[in-house]
Length: 235
Image (tube, rainbow, N blue to C red; front, side, top):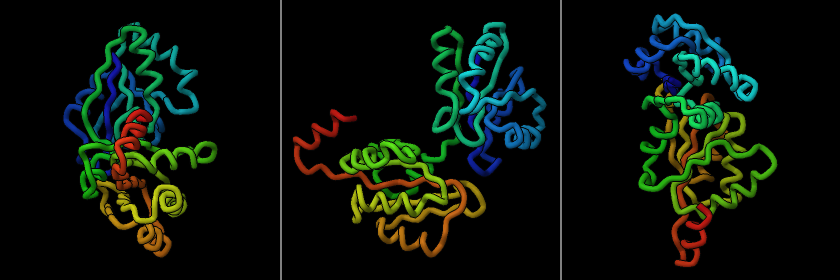
């Protein structure tokens, strides 16, 4: 069986008993970075072989992993932080397991955008997970598409690109939109700031951000029935 095991996004106390038990029963742990995951496994006294599985080798490693699963091995997939497959490697392996009839178990657990969304004060009944925007080609197209999204928008961004991303939200989505910038979720210096995007730009120009970043963007309001139907068709 393939087990998808979420790991803490910051605070190690968020590791579940079930996650620890699952890693202990597996034959192999697939991990993005064996150094990062090695520290996690050592902290919980888990002694298992680790195989590197990341964006640069997942195509090449896929067949070997599937073969081991067919041979009866239990394999766990973890990412550096959070739930595998959410802006992290995992989709290709899961799809291959589905195609091959291999059993899959995904444990519930940490995902960075959930606490950021819930604590943002913005609408949570409908939200759109965009994740990381394209760095170059197609970036403006995606931003223009998101401008009409009638749901709260969730973005991931690196700290050194945060101000640029906020400026693009101002230019392409709207300068009156509220944004919540959440960083270092569950860690000692956790910070969540909800401001109009222009105010957020000024804040982070004066106080450079560090750590992992989640940006929650206020969704568009419906203006006409025709516009609502157009956006729903796009989704």
